Image 1 (tube, rainbow, N blue to C red):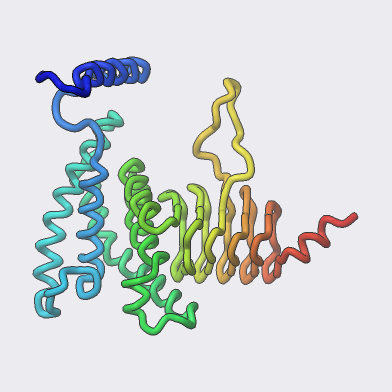
Image 2 (cartoon, rainbow, N blue to C red):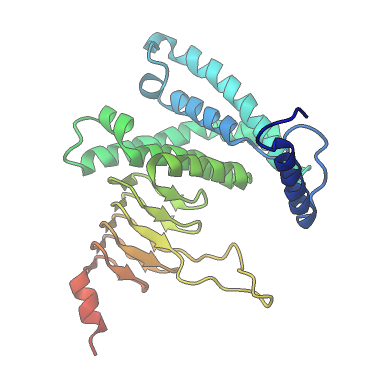
Amino acid sequence: MSASAFDVAEVVAGLRAARTRWRESQQRQREPGGRELPSREALQGIVESLRGVLFPMRLGPPDLRQDSEDWYIGHTLDTLLHALCAQVKLELRHAGRHEVDAEDLVRRFAASLPAIRGLLDSDVLAAFHGDPAARSVDEVLLCYPGIDAMVHHRVAHRLYELGVPLLARIVAELAHGRTGIDIHPGATIGAGFFIDHGTGVVIGETAVIGERVRVYQAVTLGAKRFPTDDDGKIRKGLARHPQVEDDVVIYAGATLLGRIVIGRGSTIGGNVWVTDDVPPGSQVTQATTRQDRRP
């Protein structure tokens, strides 16, 4: 290595030592060659291509014409599915799941795309009908961060269901970085979901949301506590986030914690803290929660 005025060789040696310590502490095998983990950059390109496949005349190339849609979708889909398969193989190899057929998994993902498009159509319509400022469904699709987040989530959730949670999490975090909306790919969200404004929304892994639900900015559907095992380590995979039934509205800043049920047709007011079940058709506001706390 050439000499440098910035002691680069010493820094390189220090970083090598740090990597070695980490790999030994994690009992990592030396990489046989090439990349060990999926690529965030590759997945970003795959998701961008998927956006165009799902909505070719709105999120596809600017010079696309309707009479070329099928050709564009077929060509783009073939390329992105091969790229996705390569990323799936990396995750499966890293997880030691050599029995899983990556190509079959990707075929199943591709077969889900028409259903994903249908769910996204319902989300777009929910945003259009739910926001008096929306002038068209095209504006909603092109401009609303909540829809951008849901495009990513619908894709990420399907990957999560198919058993590649690391890929799913990367896709979800791409949306988080773009929009400020943090939806874990494990969250189950029904049709017609509308996130208005969106910044600061957090939806946890085991949350279950029904149909035609609307939430505003800074809403949290989180866990109330984290049970631990005998060694004091957090137990993973437990249902710990709220269940929100159909036709619920949750206003800005509301925090809903734990495995509670928010009954159908309820309205949760802004900035309230909810840790108990809410009966169907309820209206929960700061005033009512203060009254509930009185002896």
